[in-house]
Image (cartoon, rainbow, N blue to C red):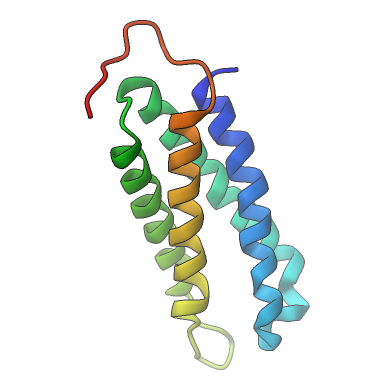
Length: 122
């Protein structure tokens, strides 16, 4: 299995788990399914990008940083959208997105077959 495919699978699974953490915010429990699907999509994006990066650069530190930064950025875009009453859930969205992105970045470095001739920059 290639690193982008491993990232895609990890992104979907961890994205669903990330989205499920919305259950702890009672104001959005009615939207749990939509949130889980959106988080899975964010996880897929992070997984594909981190997997592609892991094929090019074999460095756990850089992979974790890329995944965490991309997860945080995508979570920021979602958190910037206000609820109907005008409130934002910055911490509740961005913290799990950051952590999930970092885990996906780590997993893409560890899982999947490395590309032929990939550099080993540590």
